Amino acid sequence: MPSKLLSNQPNKAIYVDSIASLSAPLSSMSSTFSLVSLLTMAYHVRTPQPANQERLLTLLNTMSPVLRTNTDPRYSREEVLNSFVHFLSPVLNGMAGMLELLANVDAFSHPEDFRQFWSLEQSNLIRDFVESGGPLRGMQGYDVPFLETFVKDSSCRIALGSNKGMLLLVPGDAEVGDDVWWDEDEQRLTVRKGVEDLNTNVEAYLDNTSRITVMAIPSAT
Image (cartoon, rainbow, N blue to C red; front, top):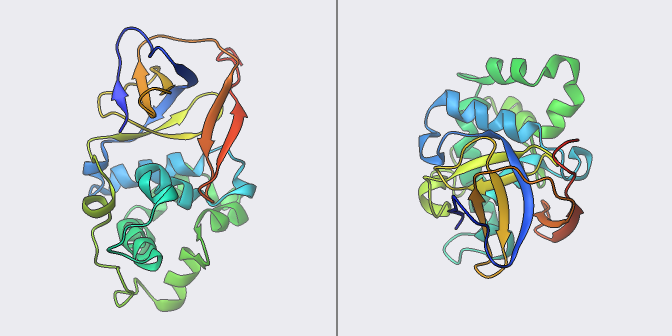
C-alpha cells in the first residue's frame, strides 16, 4: 500500500510525479459529490492517451492494484466488473450526479469522447444502462460491495499527476503539490513534501494490466 514520507525519499526510489488534484478518501464515495469528482479526475487522464486505454478500467485497477495482475479466487472477472458497475451506478443511473459530470468534462462539446469514457472491457455502460432502462440488478456480482471487497485500504485517495496525467493511489494524508515516488525496496508508492524537477523513467499501469515505462516531464512544463 502507498505510504507517506515527509522528509527524505526512499534509498532506492523513482520520482513519478507531483499531485495536481486529489479525490476524497475512497471510503467517502457513497457521496455523489465525491464520486462525481473521482469520475471527473478519471476523465482527464492523459497517460496513457484516452484513445489507447479504457479510463474506467484504469480507475478500477488504480483503486484495487491487486486486480491488475491477480484474480480474486472468490469472484470471477465478470463479478468484479459488475461490482464496479454497481459502485458507479449512482451516477450511471442518471438520478444524481450525471448533469454535474457532463458539465465538469464539457461532454456536450465532445460527445464521442464522453461515450468512449464509459467503455469497460466488452461493454459500454452508458449504452447498457439506456437500453436496459436502469441497472441490471440481476447481473452476477452486482451486489458485491466493490470498496469493501476489492479495495484494501479505503482511506487512500486517487491522485492525478500534474505532469503526465496518470492516476495514482496515494495515502489519505497526501496533499496537492506532494511528490510521488516509487519505492524500489518496498515496491510501493510513497509520498513526501517538496517539489522535484526531474526527468527520469517512471512506471505506470495500463488498462491491460501490463507495465510500461514512460518519461516524466519536468515539473516546469
